[in-house]
Every structure is written in structure tokens, then in C-alpha cells.
Image 1 (tube, rainbow, N blue to C red):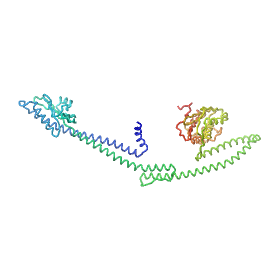
Image 2: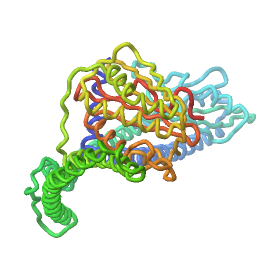
Image 3: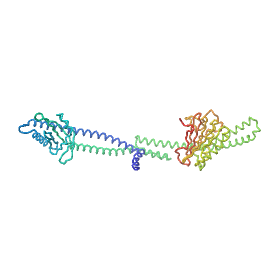
Image 4: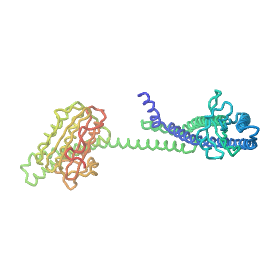
Length: 516
């Protein structure tokens, strides 16, 4: 059974992968349908024509024979011979006439018994035809089977019958059984010719369709090969262009696209190099004055008690803003590394539960300031191969974001692990966001509530960096929210680097709020 299933799967795979096979199979299928309909119509018409012609000939011959028998029976002299003798003679004469060319056999229902041609089985006459003649004098016909008693096989036949009248108007049924063997053989020959013609047409059309499909598909296959080489980095490859038809236009378009792609990629590479150089220069140029300003601010902060209240407040604000500026500069540099494709992982097997506990402790003061409590629901361990600093940064961003927009409500942190992945979900019950805004929360500098100030740190880049860190691991970072019902951010990471994720151990929609 498996082998049969494999055989049935082969056409499906060819249909999905091969354009010539689809063209050829479709052409052949339509051809077979047309040939079947046409062949059926021709054979049906031929059958009807042959049988109708044969029937008319049989009726004409039977009418002639019956007319002669009626005349002969009308002239019978009962003083010299009996009706039975004359019927026997008439049947013998008719049978002799029908034996020429084996046209028909005769059966006459006499006064005493049936009078039949030699070797004719009386059962060749259908009972329905005998019953019909009991109430009718018309010339009747019906298909039948010609059965002979001399060992010859049964043959298809046509029974024609009518009545002749003798002395005293006595009715005598006469049956003529015509053989249809020759007509059946003719029809069989017509059918064989139709089948042979159909097979030849299918073969010729299949071969023709195959070469036509190849002639059309070859340029498309060439374009596919060129596209594959271009996607592999070989932008110098080109298609051969011959002629001026549509397929030649395809080659010209592919070549033009390759040239434009090469030019754009060169521009992007130049811009990328320029960006990396700009990031390096900005890092160097900003770090130095920032360090100087930080040192001066530290000196002023050390003597803040000696300053007037207004100046002391200014020093405090300067310290806060310098910290935010340093954080913003670090995150901008990290974003630039992601944009330049320079970010790399340094993975090791760690316990994700431990990483989450460390970050919960780190935001303890912030949680106390907002009046919220961070509640952890986790297994004892959740080992995964990850870059610990990057995962900690993701969790820190999610916790800080939840505390900032949680309106002082408790924060629920859930950890689940299975054979493939580990999931960390951070749930708050604050302002939340709409379904349309769920796709924007990872945009740079986007805020769920623009009217709010950034009272709890934050640069607007944390979630963007967290998303990039998750993708760098080959994982997911999803967001769910509803206005007034809070939000949940779910981080899903593969337990082994390079493992492809298919599902997460924790749902996107919180378990305490199922989508209606």
C-alpha cells in the first residue's frame, strides 16, 4: 500500500514542480475528453446508421417474402392439397431464398405445429413478438438472438414478423430471423479504427505538446537559473537574448533588472560602509566630550550640598539627563550595529529562570517606587543556549516597560519550557493598546500613550532593540494589548541555537483574558 501511495504522489510532485508536465498533462487530458466525446458521437451515429439501414433492408425483404407467401396461400386448392402442405412448401421456398448469402431463416406457425428452416431453433423468436402478433397484422420487428441447432454459435439477429391469411381467413404468423453478424463485425471494425485513431492522435499531440512546452518553458527555466545565481550573489550573470518576441523581452528585462540590482547593491554597500564609519566617528566624537561633561557633573554633584537650592536642583537634573543621554547613545550604537548587520551572539547554556530573577531584583527599587509587585510563575529551571546579556536586556526592557505603563498594578511574569523552546511572558494591567497599535509597539521612539512623559527612564528604543535581539537568536517577540486591560509581551527562544521554532510554550493572548 505504501508503494501505491508513493506512486500516486509522484504525479502530484511533478504537477507542483514542473511547468512542462502541467502543460502536457492538461493538454492530454483535454484531448482525451474531446476524443472520447467525439468518438462516442461517431460510433453512436455509425451504429444507428448501420442498424437503421439493415432494418429497412430487412423490412423490405420481409414484406416482399410475405407478400409472395400471401399470394401463394390465397391460391391453394384444398381439394388437391392441405393448408399444412402448402405452408410447408412456402416455408421451404422462403428458407431457400433466405439461405442465399445466409440472409435469414423462416418460421411459420402452422395449423398443427411450427414449420421452421433447417437448423433454426424456434426459441430464436422472442415471446413478446409472438404475443404482439396475436392482436396485430402489421409488420413488426425486434432485436433477438439467432440460435441454431447445428452447433454454430449464437448470433445477433433481427426478428421481423407478420401474418398471412389462409382459407376461411385463418391467421398464420410468419417470422423471418435475419442475421446481424456482418453488421456487428462492421461496427467492431469502426470501433477499433476509432480507438486506434484516438491513440495515435493522443501520442502525436503528446509529443507535439511536449516540444511546444519545452520551447516555451526553456526561457523561463533560464530566467529561473539566472535569478538563483543572482540571489546567490553572482550579479554579473546575464540571460542570452535572441529574437524580438515576448520571451526575448523577458531576457532583456531580467538583464536590466540585474544591472539595476547591482547598481543599487553597490550604492547600499557604500551607504552601509559610510554608516559604519559615521557610527565609529560619532562614537569617538561623542564619547570624549560626554566623558568630560560627566566628570564635571560628578564634581558639581560632589559639592551639591554647598550650592544654592536652585543650582543644586540643576546639577541633579543634569546628572539625570546625562545618564539618559549615555543610555540613548549606547542604544543608538546598538541599533546601528543591527542595521549594519554587525551584531553577533556569544551563546552559552544558561538557566533563563535565573536571568529573569536577576532582572526582577534589578527593578525592585523601581517596582517599589511605582507601588507594583512583580510576581513570578516559573519552573525550577529552564536551560537554553542563549546570549545571556542580550536576553537579560530583553527582560529588563519588558519589565521596565510594564512598570512604566502598568499604573501601579502587579506585574505577572510567566516562564514555560518544552523540548524546543522557552517562553517568558510579562503581563501588566495598565493602559494597554489597541490591536492596530500592536504592530507599532516595536517601532523606534513609539509610545502607547504620547501624552505621558518618560517619567521612568526609557529612550524609546528598548522594544526595538529587544525585537532585534530576539530575531538574532532565531526567536520571537510578540505583543498583545487591549485598552484598559493591559498588555502582554511574550518572548520565545529556541533552546538550541539554530533550531527552528514551530510553536511557543505560552500563548500570545493571556490566559486570564481569552479573545471573544
